[in-house]
Image 1 (cartoon, rainbow, N blue to C red):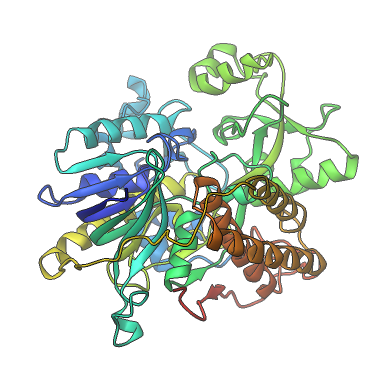
Image 2: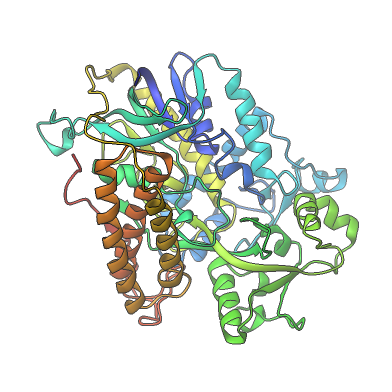
Length: 542
């Protein structure tokens, strides 16, 4: 039997953005943090690199801002960039206060920098400004924040809860105008009971991560299905710049390795990209060679693989001392060793893979969406920070800065926001159990394959038209299936992936130029004027 719950704040997503929001909110608010799998199933836990910030005396806010603007290929919102960078030190100080065990400097380096923690450098950055915990920063941050959240009596952490859709006043017919539209809660599938429960909340925060699972090859965990983006779109929110999908240049290429990312910090510490014959090639594409931004490196690798007809290229750090490699990259070293690759002695086979969704739900500096009392933070959101290409390690920083800003805004709105009453329960009276789940599996596979083939690193108008034709057919099939059968996690994720794939394709078709992560053979040059791609729903699903 389905259940109804009442909270002050409902946070959908248990990664860095969601946990930071929960921990920053006032202690008197009753908060639910939902995870659709285990609490650690999101992307945060697997992040290796670190958090960018202005921490060293030789670095400046202006330098970090300019590096970000350059990497963003002229499309960053400079106000969003400055807001993020100016708040980087306070966000990182907060993480240190939370107890995150970042890697410390040796005594001489600490004295020289007047900073106790080791900083590394990654592609696009002109300074060492990445604070990290060896090469497992995400795990260190997540474990620390989760432990702290468990100590808070007002925070309830609930696993195996799959959000289905947002409940808004517009959907319930309670609005006088579009401006009155307000988020009242969400319908959520309890995977244990199989029932769809009703969560009533005064504030709802979408922190569900990105949508890289829309591609066949990705560094992301299985949960990265664009759930928050799809739910917000169906509820009436605008989305922005979804044509910009970042492909991480270096994921481990091995038949038994599932989406294992090789951190960019290896290249920051001097690793070389090589062809099978040992030739380095990045200098032919960019003067910064291996330290060029990710979009340039990914395209270069893709070009060489297609030119030579090879399955992978190689990342080689074996020229560095073995103890240096094992100390700085223990996770990569141990993981590669399980596949018989000793990175202190030999290069790592790598391929590009979908990694980060630069666009998302349009928000302001407080994480506000187009719907009252609905916030979006982290990879779910489009803040304007990343422009046409996210610079390395700015994404975790964005999570902390905007999560803290959203939490502070909720605290200010707390006294004047009332909860709704009498939310209708989920209606499952007209659906039956499916005996054709093979259709879901087939559609899932087809979607991810044509997105990889037609909407990948290099695009054309013809490829995008083919993708659009296929996704429209899939959307019709999925809609029919969704209307007639009980919901499941697989069906919910497929529905969301198809919606986000359609939005990505439509966004890519709107951009008649090549800029940053969007590269098309039909329009190889960049326009003089940079404009965001903003899509607005023509109607709100009822």
